[in-house]
Amino acid sequence: MDYDKITQHLEVNKNTVCNWVKVWQKQVIAGLARKNGQGRRQILSVDNKKHTEVLDRAVENHYQNIKAIQAELVKELALPMSSDRVKRFLKK
Image 1 (cartoon, rainbow, N blue to C red):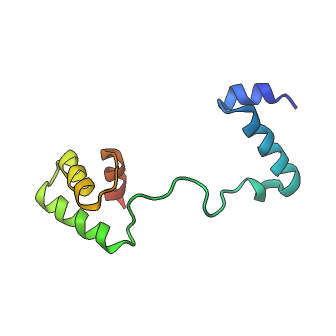
Image 2 (tube, one colour):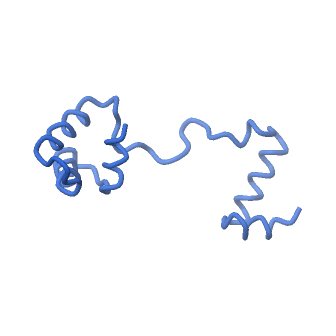
C-alpha cells in the first residue's frame, strides 16, 4: 500500500494513515467509527439550561446582530466562542 499517495490525497500525516490501516486490520469498519470522547468538546449545549437562558436573553436584546449576541454570551458565560459557533448553536 502506498501511504504517501494517500497522505497527499487526503492531506493528512503519514502516521494518521498508518494508524487508520492498523485499526482497519484489527477491527475492520467498526474500528474507524468515531468513539465517545473523540472530537472537540462542545462549548454550548442545548441541554445546559444556563446556556439556553443566556442565549434567549441575548437574542431578545440583540435580534439579528450575531456579533452582539456572541459578545454577550462570552461575557455572561466566560467561554470563548466564535460568531460561527453561535450561528450553529442557534440552528439547533
